[in-house]
Amino acid sequence: MQLGVNVPNFGPGTDPGLLRDWAWVVEGLGFDLLMVSDHVVVTADVAERYPEPFYDPFATLSWLAGVSDGRLRLGTTVLVLPYRNALLVARMASSLHRLSGGQFVLGVGVGWARQEFEALGVPFGARGRLTDEYLRAVREAWAKQGEGAAAPVWVGGHSAAAIRRAVEFGDAWHPLRLPVDRMRAVLENHDLPGFAPRIALRLTDEPVHDADRPAGVGDLDQVLADLRELRGLGAEAVVLDPYHADPEETRRPETAWRALTAVSEAWRRAS
Image (cartoon, rainbow, N blue to C red; front, side, top):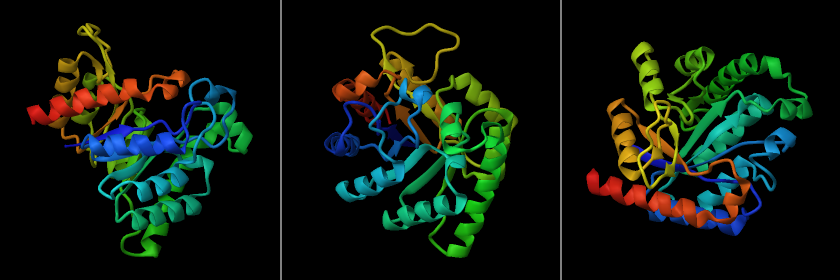
């Protein structure tokens, strides 16, 4: 099972130098995958959690591909597919996939920021239908582009529609920040093409005793147990997300780096 990190590509503390440092930390700790998030217009609803500067995911990953050693897989968790023309997404994704030596993962979702949809002139209520149409168009465009164009597609979300979308169009189901039990229930009741969750990473000094505890939240032993359970459920990759919706965290990346170091070292010792 591969381990990845969702790196903040936004916020008051984030700049090109810090993004480069993030890549070096992720790489140096032995993680397999670096992923970034997506917003196009930082409207008020977005800015509360993901304020400017917000670096475009395709531009950011293309740049990081050039400053890393080429071993890391790179991806989006998740690209809001209805925000861009499907053929443009297909071209950008296939270009990055080829230029990175086949190391790109296209994680996609329908989006949640109503004000951002309005700013872009995209109907919020049609986002599910549009995501289906765009995924189909992306797949068709890749087929026309020929061998090497198609990146793995991870479909985010955990609604019935998202799970159906993962089965129909995806290479893996990519749920975000769920408890292990909820992911297990979905996996037991659906024949999914693959499984690659993104989980929180919030290390605590004491165990967290909460029936709804999200995977990745708790003391180090709990987080390691979550990873073992996810591996047992067939996860091909698990992406750790150390950002907790406070933009000021982007000024203090050392806190996240310490947590990632603890998990990486303990996981290697146990594996």
